[in-house]
Figure 1 (cartoon, rainbow, N blue to C red):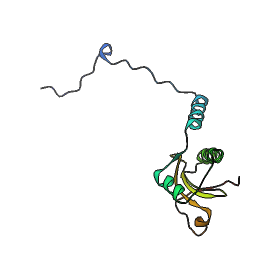
Figure 2 (figure 1 turned 120 degrees about the horizontal axis):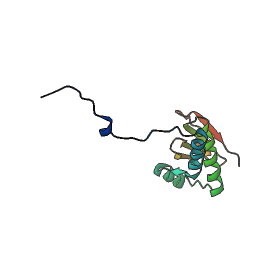
Figure 3 (figure 1 turned 90 degrees about the vertical axis):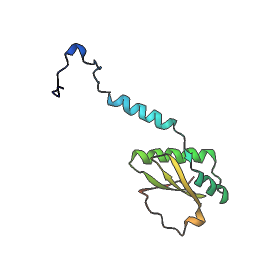
Figure 4 (figure 1 turned 45 degrees about the horizontal axis):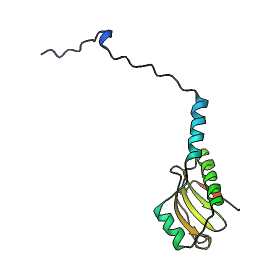
Length: 123
């Protein structure tokens, strides 16, 4: 048995297309469009907390929260605290997900760890 490595003639080699560099602007534009199409997810835990704590956030405010989360993501924030007039939300901007929710009264006596940004929404 011959264990030497043999060269394959070019006519038998696989012909893969050359990888071309993508223009940076097109990639950025696609990423921005893709991120805008993402919708905010609410984890099962957060959904339960919103219901049991009787926290109601209207559609307009959810859109504002989502916009601010996207802005925070662009600035490198991965886990954030979102403070609104009615609630405090712990969110993952990486996953675009609300992790948990507290009412403002309950959140006033807490220490929040493992976050690297805070979003304050006054409206």
